[in-house]
Each structure stands twice: as C-alpha cells, then as structure tokens.
Length: 394
Ligand SMILES: [Zn+2]
Image 1 (cartoon, helix red, strand yellow):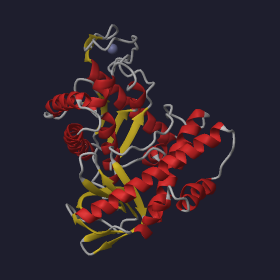
Image 2 (tube, rainbow, N blue to C red):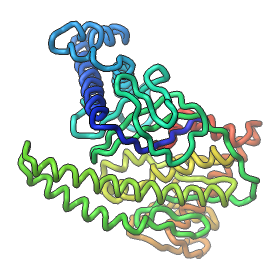
Image 3 (cartoon, rainbow, N blue to C red):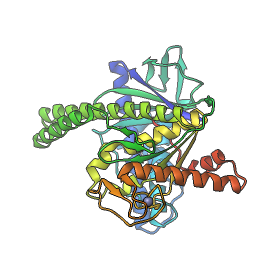
Image 4 (cartoon, protein in one colour):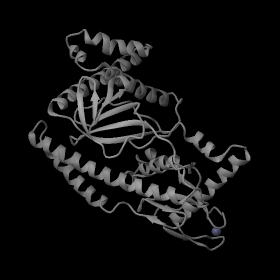
C-alpha cells in the first residue's frame, strides 16, 4: 500500500532561495490556471486540460511578464497545473451533483504567506546518497529520522508557514499483519473527550492541547492588531505559525498513539462516519475542530490496513445516541446536554457516549455479517467502500 514518509530537510541559503523561486512560480501557475478556467467558465467556453497547460506554461514563458517561469524545473509547474485541474474539477463536480459528500467550495488562490509546497515525480528528484536532489535546486540535506521502506515514487517539498522545510515521500510499504484476536471495538468521537470506546474507556484530548490553544488564540489577537506590511506583523505571523505547528504536532502524535493501541488490541475497529466538514459550519465548530477527529480516524484507517485489521465507518444516519444499546428501543433524540439517561423500556442507565460506541460496534458487526452472507469477505468489502476516500496521514 502507498503511504507517506515525512522528514525534516535543511536547505542551504542558496537552496532556500531557489526553492522560493519554485514556490513562487508554481503559485503563479496555479492561480493563472484558476483564473483562466474561471474566465472560460464565465464565458461558457470549454477548455481542454492541454490547452490550459499550454497557455499558462508554454505560452506564458514567452511573455515578458512570465518569462521567469523558464528558470525553474517544468515538472513542478506541470504538477501545479494538475493540482489546479483537480481542485477545479472537484468543485465543478460538486456543483453539478456528480460528487458525493459535502459541497466543495470554489478553489482559493494560493497565497504567499501560507504553507508552500511543490510536488515532484521521478524525473524531478533523486536520492544522492544521504541527500535529496531536487531539479534546479540541488542536493538538500535530510534528517533521516527513519529509513524509507522502498524507493519513493514522488516527493512533496514543503515549506511550512513557520519557516521549516520538509520532504514528504510517497512510498510503497508491505502490510505486516498482526496475529488475529477476537476483540472488536466501537469508537464514538466525543466532544468533551477525543473519543469513547464501547468498552467504556474515555480517551482524553492530549493534555497540552488546551494550553497551546490558549497561547495560539492570544498570538492571533496580537497578529490582528499589527499593521500590514510592518516588521512586527511578520514576527507576529511567525509566532502564530509556530504555535499552530505545536498544536498540530501534539494532536497528531496523540492520534498515532491512540490509533496504534486500538488497532493492536482489536481485530476490528468501527467508528462513526461523521461529516465533520458539515458540522464545522455549525455552532459546534470550535469543539469539533479541536477534537481532531478526522486525524484520529485517518490514523486508525492507515494502521488497520498496515496491520491487517478491519476498519469500517458506520453510516452517520444511524441514530446512535437515540437507541438503547441493551434492548434496542429507540426513544428519540436527546439534546447534547443530556450526558446520562435511563432507558424507558429496560431501565438500563447509559452514559451517552458509551451507549453510542456500543451501538456503533453493533452496527459494524451487522454490516460485517451482511457482507459475509453476500459472499464478500468483510475486509474486502470494507476496503472497497473506503477505496475512494483512503488517504494516509502526510
Ligand atoms: Zn433499553
């Protein structure tokens, strides 16, 4: 299976300059692509992908305003074109109802002060001994924190908003199945805690997250007060970026550890398929994004594939908090403030989240036995269902 391996890299001052040039060029090509496609869309014209590429790269290089595009490796520019096409297509398909899931917004232009990245395929990079060779940039020093499992097929060179550089390789990795066990678990993604399992275990959010978030909020306030174009604004922006990284790293590290434990201890893990992006727009926004659910679920999915375990998402329309997990009676919706309730039919007292996790486990088991009866092996059915959405954590 394909996974990403990420390493910190240390380009020299000259290489940083060369990379800045590539980032700038790909950003311009990406934004030109969007502008051209928007113009054609508005005029009701169809434009082919090759024509877009010809106009924003090949022809643009011949004009005085874009002549500098010729100074960087064209592989990176072509990738930027493809990225723009993908983003545009996703939005367009979503608009026309050809794409399932939450509505996709119109792709935004890339901006200078955000995270910058370039994607390079085989002809744009190579490994020279311990160093990473990037076309027209040179041999960059890499901090090899772990060995690559195979020869990478592509690399993304990233400059985060806080100024750190990374190389993220796409590699093929063999699955290493663990001996099977007979435990299965349902996971309910919570609001107060990160998750609750059907065993009744409460998985808290990482301890330092709150503190880091408070600091981040303060730094963002400072940034908003700084005058545009001032040196102090640059400093404030850097501080915000650093705190963002700390929050992200804390959360990801915690998600990896939690996911590994759940996958190692259970043959199958079921989680609720929440349209997190849909929820984001409601008042729950902050706590939802805080919890970092999609990160956790992504980690579980990746590790389940690695260790030969089953992972499945349960349709989000199952009323998992309305049904009694002991007797199956559905006694209607309850406001989020109700943490504990007694079933009117059988009298069992439920913790809201544990009850939901138990229902998720039951729904997962039911799906699995249905798949068995239909003659499909469960892990294949799960893999098929997830094939379109599988993405490993970068
Ligand atoms: Zn009951």
